[in-house]
Image 1 (cartoon, rainbow, N blue to C red):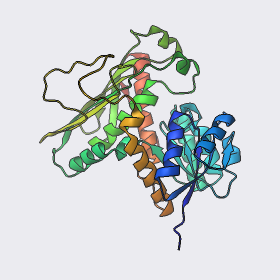
Image 2: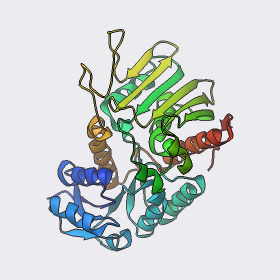
Image 3: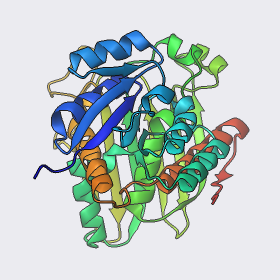
Length: 340
């Protein structure tokens, strides 16, 4: 007897969505890639041809009419996530949505309400939880090996500066929503506590034209936790030397590092290279995590279980991002709004 496979449709087949589609097609045996959709219909057709699947669409509404699609994977630009969740939920499809859940709390709450009304399940794409190193770190935290977590520190630096067109298009959220939100999720998850207050410091000094589009080049966000811990998240969009992500959880009995910790006292990194082999892109650094994330989602859907990373997790991380943006705009610490 053949095991039932989960029929999946992928919405948005740009860089991220195409990788998801490739993973579903080739690396998730419990799933079947039925179709892809994109507002650029020609791009959708091209990806469908490359992946040797029959169906492609120019919009989600058409794709979700298919009875053989059980779940939709959403990888559109940030500001279209809520609308796509509503459409997929109304069609009775389970959903794996890339982060962020939305770019404001009202849209996020509406999306979760629609999911609840439709009786479907929603997973948010915080794939770092599936990264082998972060997963191992969490197991040690849960086992009490570092005692009570006291300090959280996380660094997220993209290698190449985004093209100005990415800012001009206004379809993605600012730095806090597109970059820092991964670290905000880790900050809750690894510390096993909620963040109560943030204070954001930002700069556009090396690229002042970004400011006119309401964004920043780099930020440092200080965190206060509900039970007394503190933390810090640094984000930077043009590190030039590598794609660089590192996290540390400091506890009462020890510390856990995720990322590189070299014995050499000084490492010099420039655009001309390094004596180390460095990652240059998030799709390389977290390749295994993206596969594991979809595999886990598919298994949860097939066994009628709740996803590991829920819509509520997406909402909690978004609340932190919203507070960070408010702190950036008003130049003072900001309470994290805990919504229902």
